[in-house]
Figure (tube, rainbow, N blue to C red):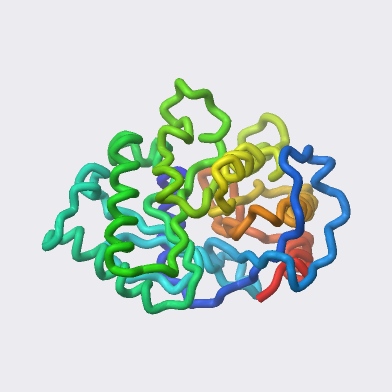
Length: 303
């Protein structure tokens, strides 16, 4: 997301009432499903089906759901949410990586760790988000980000925090570009020892920017493959489709894709935030609301 969209997160995401919206129970999945294959009949949920979480980023539509993915900064209050993205408050990745006991940044991280330690898990926690995007160019290089991520994880571990699932949140595009591209996902990967879940933010920009229509299955499969290759869970930290009459069907297709790949997905959060300068992801029409209601009622999705 760009700077204006990050501002929207501040308005709609940083201080939210707690409501762990929905847990998704997603059935057995098959790697490399085509968009058509992903629309096969959903398996019946059972007690053995993995439970994962579903919710919203933002609450712009006043849906009968409250977001459970919140964004904040290390110098701010720790949000009440199942997934939390912790920003560095403008601190350069290298400075975050070098935060020593007694420093302001270190003490802020300790405060976050001790707060989260008392909460029921799992809590999906990510350090920064989409660090490869233009919005974070001034924060430092991929190598510096990796060191920062590892340092934060080590601090939490040293304090006995065991209920946090370390979540690495990138754009879905980072898993598509070639290895020579600065945004290439593997360059930003903190390593298997430091990551529990791979999160990718996937969007269908077609109705806003033109170009081909992109189902969630198309946008997210490369990240899903990466997660499986590294033995990690997959998370949709953000996902959405631009406005239009086809969005409701896009959501239904997204539901089928998630259910079909249940053995890897841990959580998914729709980006319900308006944006006047880019795509308006906000759920507005009755058909969109009905599509989300279908996800909620699906036996694979639970409170």
